[in-house]
Structures are given as structure tokens and as C-alpha cells.
Image 1 (tube, rainbow, N blue to C red):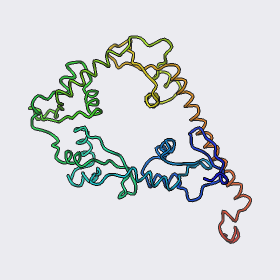
Image 2 (cartoon, helix red, strand yellow):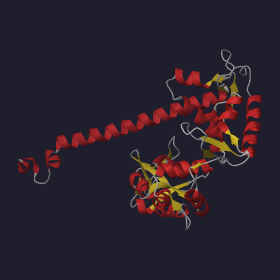
Image 3 (cartoon, helix red, strand yellow):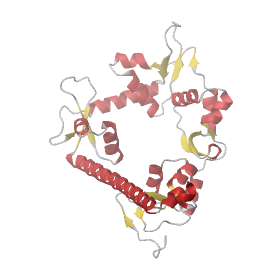
Image 4 (cartoon, rainbow, N blue to C red):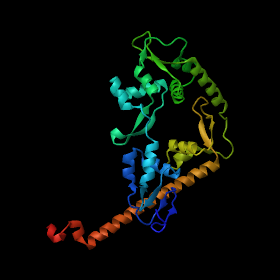
Length: 316
């Protein structure tokens, strides 16, 4: 916007406000339809400088030229296949295709699909898509030397689900193999190198568990529940903004999952962020109520506006 048209100042969310609605700029709803992304994702891109956004009466608007360049940068290379493309080629359900990709440790790239109205879908590189198409769901026997994940996890006293989640998260391949007893569900196997990597990670993680928390540090779960906040959202915020947390054993049950503590400075930063966020939401709600009150007042003063062309008498 030109300086003589708008007067900008920074809000808590980092998006400048303007005194006049910018002409030709995209509304947040139209931007979401074109990109297939949530408005929070687009706002984060504006903070990073990839987009230019302004706020007018509580609503976001995006500069069209930079927005088109942003869409071009996020376009999918030629030859990539979407999740629906692979499902059509294999004749399988999309959930089955996703399970194959997870079993192979293949990561998808999420981007809008122009053929689906800009909706965000999973895209796979040509080589990854070929592996998914040729993948066999259940083998008759496991590959030679591969490790039975559930048996080894139970033998070490670990959760089999936690082990499988770790293997999937860090891209280690796993396969399903049938058991001699046909009534037993297939078991998952992983390469010995992947199992050794997990054992080493587990040893490092258990060595870092403290017997008691540092002095003055805050129990994240207890404080979040006491304030009525989501425990998972609190942990995600601390992790996202680089605040260190330490695991501490539970005195009642040493084998239970350790609890997390954070420094008092990190907790104060999180409380301040929650306070600013709640104030911003209440301000947006107040602006919406004020707009509705002005509209109702206008209709009371000029009933023909609500009745349509010709006035209230004509409407009757």
C-alpha cells in the first residue's frame, strides 16, 4: 500500500493494519482457496517475508503479485504423483497407499493440487511412487536377518508401539510378514541396522533422564492442566520456539513415562504468549460485535435498506 493511502502499525501477530481496505488484494478466503493452505500458514509465510499481508477491520488481505509468485515457488515438479494418482493406478484405497508409504518410510510433500480446486494433497517423487506401487503388503516370510520388532521390544521392556513410531518417524523401513499360525496377525520386522540405531538412541535418551527436576523448574503438564490449557499444545509450543525441557523419572513408578519440566523463563514466555493471544482474540470478537451493532443501527434508521429496493412499503 502507498503511504498516502494507508497508515500501518504492527499488531501482536506481526501483521500491519491499514486504515483503508486495499484495492484488488486477495481476501483470506480467496487465498486459502487458491493455495489450499490454512490462513495461519499463510500468515506465517507473511511474517517470513514470502508474502505481504495487511489487516483491515480484523480481516486479512494478501498482495496478489507476491501471492502468485508464492504459488509458483510451491508448484510440484513434473512427474510427481499425488496420493489420488497412485490410488487410481493401484486400485487401492488412499488409506492403504498411505500405510504403504509409512511402512517404507517415504515422506510426502504437501502442496495444493490445481485439479482439485487448490486443495492440499500429498505428492510423491517418481522413484518413491514406484516403490509404493510395487510394494507387497504382507510377505510370506521376513527377509533374512531382519528383527522382529514386537518380540525384541517386549524382551527389553519397551513399548512396541513407541518403537514402531520411532522407526516410522526417522524413515527406517519396516515390512509385515505372516506368522506360522494363520490366526495370528502379521508381525512387523525391521533391518538390524535400524534396530541398532534405535537401541543406541534409547540408551542416550535413558541416560538423559533425571532423577529429580532442576531447582525452580516447572512441571509442564501440571501447570498446563491447572490453567486449563492443552498439555500437548504447550509441549509443542515449547519445542517449536526452542525452549529446553528435561525428562524426569516419576518417583511412584520408575518404569512409567518420564514427565517434562521447563525453565521458569520458558514458562513465563509461554504465559505471556497465551495472554497476548487471548487479548487478540477478544479484540477481534469485539470488532466483529461493533460491526454488527453499526449494521443493526443502520437498518433501524433506514428500514428500506433491509427491505430491498423500493423501501419497506414496496416490500409489503
